[in-house]
Image 1 (tube, rainbow, N blue to C red):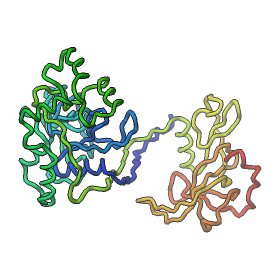
Image 2 (tube, rainbow, N blue to C red):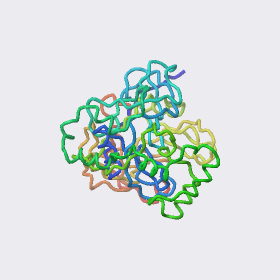
Image 3 (cartoon, rainbow, N blue to C red):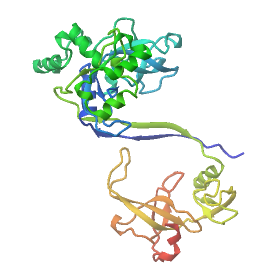
Image 4 (cartoon, rainbow, N blue to C red):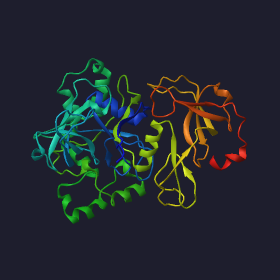
Length: 408
């Protein structure tokens, strides 16, 4: 039995995106211990906020502040945390519908064991000690048995960071947060226009909804009609008033977050199959081996174990090359992190002699702007490498176009 090849591989690349007014306000709010959502035209609140309505693709921009407490709607236990995950000890991944929101936020719940987690569990945000304007500003969620907490009220319970000490900003938040008369009957009556009366649960009440006056933001006829057909917004569904409601927020903060860096990384172990394993073993001997299709007779390099055209297994090994022809190429001008090759350089499709499929390889040994289609090349091995370091010109005349046109 041949050696079973296996190798750890890592795919990693940096990713930075700019943030618009919705995502920027959401992440800046987290830095300031405020959770923002966005209200859809039908009244429902999305947290985390989206920039576009998922059903209609309409722009969404009506920001609201929701509570820092919520309810677990779904969960899964993670017994073995991995690098970069929110907690270093076993925890639960949970979907949490924050008070005032109609969608759920995915995050970690700090719990001692799976028995401590259940759907319907009340939880609250545990803020990170240092916050930068990222989802990690929520360190995790934790079980909570108290009353629902509004974001502003909760934030007031903790020390304000220095960059939030601006009086105007605090004043603005007070202005757009909860009005002083919120608890009085008149305000409560207003809420019943858009929320629900106490007897909302029965069928008669649902019918009664068509008789109440539409609020200003429901003046559009289509929207009003739509509201009777869709699920009631969460902040209108609590007849007791115990659950904090979504409150308007202008999304204005000092020093707003405008971009997000999210490096991506995937670690995995690759084990090649029979065909690719034989190909890699031959490369260790500085030979290139493909496989021929028993039906169409094409030779595939690297071999795939099956003909992609005929759909039949390939098991006839065929040694090809080592020389070949550049069929097409590109000039690389962006230097990859961790790669010693200086830019610009050329990466090409190279059809090895005897192969019916071009493979990838770097072309060096001549100026990048002299690489061309039809250039004849040969592999260059360096040290004890298991594959060619690059390909260089052989000095032969260029191959006629008709000899490789079917390989483009």
